Image (cartoon, rainbow, N blue to C red; front, side):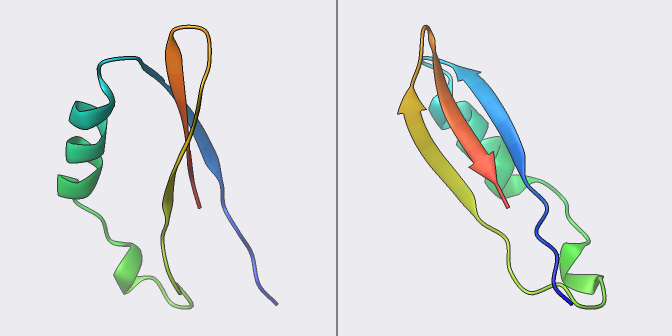
Length: 56
């Protein structure tokens, strides 16, 4: 059995680099979780004053 956890983030335009840097530098214990396979951050389209990101 497999599961995928997803989150969406609306990041204010002009703050994308800061958001991505915080994301890369964050502390995570996911690699220690039994069954954990991989983690992805996807950069999506621009909206009305924001850029959409998704993690899974």
